[in-house]
Length: 110
Image (cartoon, rainbow, N blue to C red):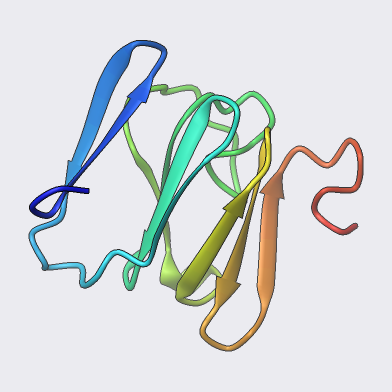
């Protein structure tokens, strides 16, 4: 991140999301095999490959280069993120953990 702009390269294409302060501080940026997610007080945004549901816990998406947002109201404010090859976990301010994406080896804990 440089001067409030986060840059991510995916499949040799540059995707950027600007942070003008209107959504608050950026808490985390993580990357999996072919996707990236970031979190701030408004929610989690993910972009990239969604073949295993990596971009959203509630739906499968097909758009590679547009950030898809999961609002904080879905599971709470994510203050930390962790990503594996094809899954994401978010830790909230209240201490809950929510995971989405691939679960072929029990990555999501269920």
